[in-house]
Structure formats: structure tokens, C-alpha cells
Image (cartoon, rainbow, N blue to C red; front, side, top):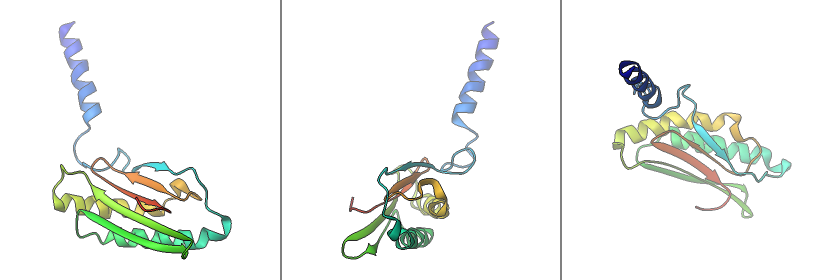
Amino acid sequence: MAAAIATLLIVVVVVLLGTGTNDFAAADDSPGYVCNGEQYKADMGPAFEACVRSLAGVVSQATGRVTEGECGVDPPTVVFYGRAFCDSRVTDWDCILCQREIAPWLLHPFCTGTVGSTLYYTNCEVRYEIYPF
């Protein structure tokens, strides 16, 4: 009985901790996400989507622990702010790799139509909003 419990405990720990092959990604390599519930106006859609693509381009070229950018959606009324950064526990190089890995996911329609979103892996995240943060 004790051996069966010990085996079950080991299996649970291995499942919870994963295999450790990718420190940043979820099991299917897609990031977690949180959407800002506010929707942008329909006529702002093309400009807003262009800003998201621009941020994805900037983050995909990350060279440091923090990558930031801003873009005018409807200047000067609406400005789009973006920021990617990492957990302090990862090396600078792993941080850059994590940002570059998460960048293409900005183009995935997780939060279509919302004015903001945060995409995250275990050690890095990228966020955009229509206000500075």
C-alpha cells in the first residue's frame, strides 16, 4: 500500500512539474492570456491591428530584458502601449528567447476586438493596452 501511494505521488509530481523541456511554454506551447474586456470601436480595427503587428515585430527582435513600444491608433486621442518583460529568475539570454518565442502569439486571435491583453509564459509576458502602465 505504501509503495502504491509513493508511486502515485511521484506520478502526480512529474505531471505537475512537467518534463522541463521548455521553461516558458504551456504544454501545447501556446501562452496563457488575459483579455481586457473593453472593446475598441469598429472603425479603429485596422489601425489597432496594425499596432499589434508592429508590437509583435518589435518583441520578435528583443535584445534585452524589457522591450517597449507605442503606436498611435487614433493620434493623439488613442495611443497603443506595449511592453514585454521577464521574471527576474531567468538569465538575460533566456529572457530574450522567451520574448521572441511569445511575439508571434500576439497575432493569434485570443483577444480579438479588445483594447488590451496580456500573454504570458512562466517566465515572460507581453502586454498591450490603450493607456500607459
